[in-house]
Length: 100
Image (spheres, rainbow, N blue to C red):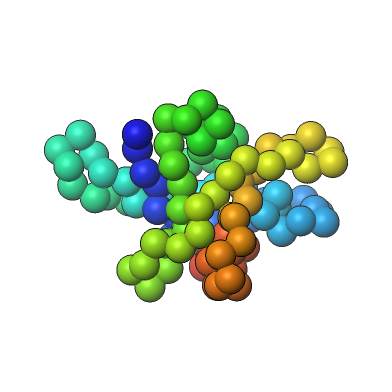
């Protein structure tokens, strides 16, 4: 299983009651086929689909440390998005990651 370490986000211009649902792109580290960690970015739905199918485990990544695990949630408007599982550290939330 691949592991995405999300270090940054890009928000869209929509108004959402949940700041995690406003994220349009995720910026992450993952290992390439050569086993080297490299940076990637992808749109919300592409990453959500990979997490949903079990192809990828996603975690927040801040200050060179793996943070909270991300799971798929659905907003009241039927928007699928990643949400961090509570781990007691408020800085591990996706919406607190730097905007790119």
